[in-house]
Image 1 (cartoon, rainbow, N blue to C red):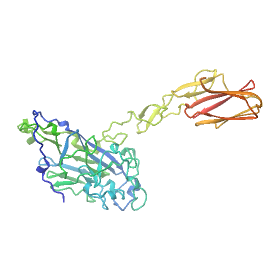
Image 2: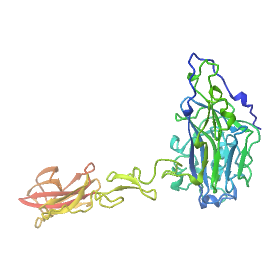
Image 3: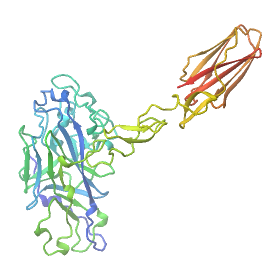
Image 4: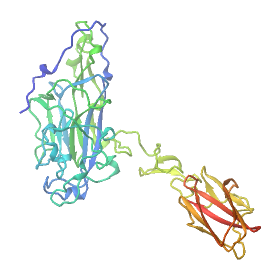
Length: 461
């Protein structure tokens, strides 16, 4: 049983010699709602964890985002200030190894069936041996890649739905450590350990960590409050108490050490004004409704990675990469076409009738070779292999025995890449030219033997 006496949560520091200033409400910078995962058909087919998980169910994680140095005291429902969680369907409940509190989940069970997307409440913990952090702050990779597949043996939690952002196979938001347990008071919700749980509201239930006021495990100071999996519309309203940093505590008898954040301010909160009211705040994002959220292209509700915003398509030959209307990151090719194929190494038209083999070069310059095409040298055989080239190619000269030979390799613009005097050669000469560090494009190899010139066209990919 988790028990909590609220006054015991409020820890006062020794008075500091500072002048009183009204509290700054920005100690709570926001409530972050992260789309953690979207279940697919493989997940839904499992019966070990539950037969109640459906494809398309979304797992949300909710964090309190505090300024550096601020600490979370408690979360809950207080007289006149209800706390609520609800779904228009039900919350997913893993009846195998799931728990109503994250700190009660044995970490060795996280890879069992759907345990890792169970619904629960917490203060920081995601298991008894892991802190919960946003996936983009997860620095130790994923431990969920070894999921046992539940009743079917088919790997679970591997869906890469873009609406969930970073896949759990890359980052699972589980940071190894020793997170706190829970103290609670009042009537705890049963919706997270009941297969039919759908809504909860209370003005006499609160929970806190069992180690006192805490900060988040990473410098961003985000503290996980709960995980909620549902295929319905997810809503909540929260109330939080936050302690200011010790450096801001002052010796004025009216100096507040606690900031109180309520989903709704009531008249009794502000009656009389002044010192009795200036530490109580209501912020719009203390309530959330998934039906009105805007999820960005990385799966973050309210995030900034929206269609039309910059991204990186991973191709160094494209420019102006942006997300399209389907959240696909596309860059413009050399003709300004998003996702187009006119990239360096592909054909183009430089508009000059006196050039041949026009090709896009690095930097999207279309160039052709001026008056230079392949020339053969009579009975002498010059070979180039392989062609096209990845990192280098071999050159063979046969039938020029007793002749003096040399070669030059130039770009399509005539720039010299390499030149070599071979002297008088025998019946056959073989050599290799390294292009590993050369740019993609068209090159021309000019071989001179016995006063005869022979040109080979070489393509570097």
